[in-house]
Image 1: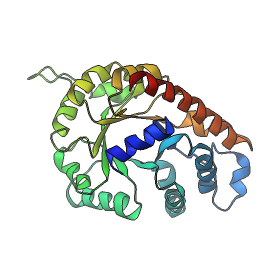
Image 2: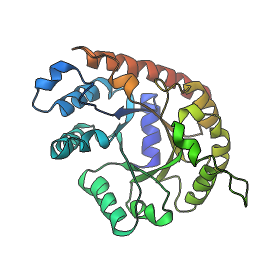
Image 3: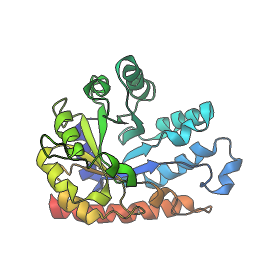
Image 4: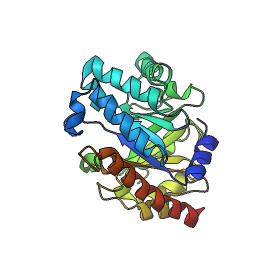
Length: 272
């Protein structure tokens, strides 16, 4: 999917919602456990309920890999079921070099046909460039996350420049590619950091986790982070997929997704 196609979908749906498919077998409704493939059945009903509001889906690979080959089969069926005009993100956080990165890229872009994959940049340029060789595919680079441990490294000041480590990561990695195939992860609970980040990368899309259950403010994220093509994919996982735990869980998920979409439509009207 191209950047223009993604923006067109955002305008069409008046939404920049990404639904995270962090499908935990211990949290899905109990009545699904008797189905042939509980993970896929849950995802299928969530997708049916939210596809009109979402422009992206983000399966978290850990929740499928934990079940071995059965979990990966559930993921493959999920990928086949997601409508082809909805952007897909493999939340895999891979970070390696050489042939290993080549194989990861092949796995996600050829075999599973994801539009994008999250990548950890700690090992530098040669851990990222293999993914950039694929046309109409995207790297989603970890930049400024909002977990407690992010301050262990990301906020460290570099002696020679005084810039923070995450700022160097963004500035350097932006030299490797362009806004047409690279996005960055920035946590919603660190919304104020978007001011400086937008000075460095005004045109890139940003994947923003942490709105809702984790306390991030959609209004702040849009005020500091939205650009002329929206430039945001705001992810919600638990707040949508676990909005209900009974037989009406899909309806509850739809209501939660619609509530976010309505708020997003208002922000798009305000900023674009």
